[in-house]
Image (cartoon, rainbow, N blue to C red):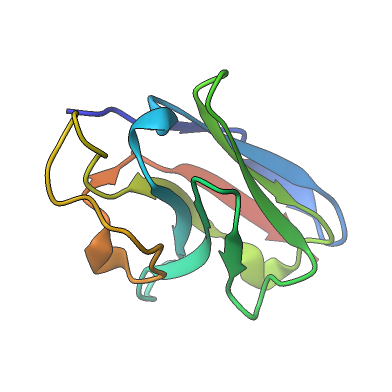
Amino acid sequence: QAQLEESGGGSVQAGGSLRLSCGGPVYLFYCMGWFRQAPGKEREAVAVVDSDGLATYADSVKGRFTISKDNAKQSLYLQMNNVKPEDSAMYFCAAPRPLPPWGAGAPTTCTMQSAGFDYWGQGTQVAVSS
């Protein structure tokens, strides 16, 4: 079972930057994603990236956040620029079923739906002050 571990969260002022990292066997997966959940709100997709590097972003973060994956470093990243107070949340990295031969039933498309992800990290907290 793949283990994912996020890091890089913290407190930052509005307009600042943070870089989140997610360590784990990212090469196992066709798609990986970042999700976030603020207190009292549902978990929402932030960005996903497939094995070809094609990324999809939530409208709320387009032009400010960048998702990337480095198989050699076994890491997934989320570069957050020009952060806003509404970006404050717990951020999670996630992955679906692994590619063969490591697993069966791996997706062939990259979804923004959390139901399509089977492995989740514990999360890293981001707090943006105005």
